[in-house]
Image (tube, rainbow, N blue to C red; front, side, top):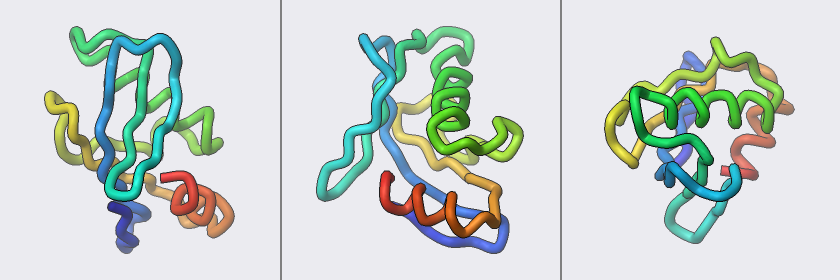
Length: 93
């Protein structure tokens, strides 16, 4: 699920830590992101933010986990007003 807010774009995703590769898998009803980092001491959350930052060329400080810090289901805020990046996020997620 993707939602526009005044602060940026909110996206709900499922994370699969400890995977072989970092990748985004989109299905009809959800977006799953595989991360190589282990779910220990916040490493998977840090790895997720680093992966999303590189993938979408958004600064790490502009990507925030607003819900689901310790859950596999997360709500992420992309604090950007760049229309091109928002379009890419909507298409990919």
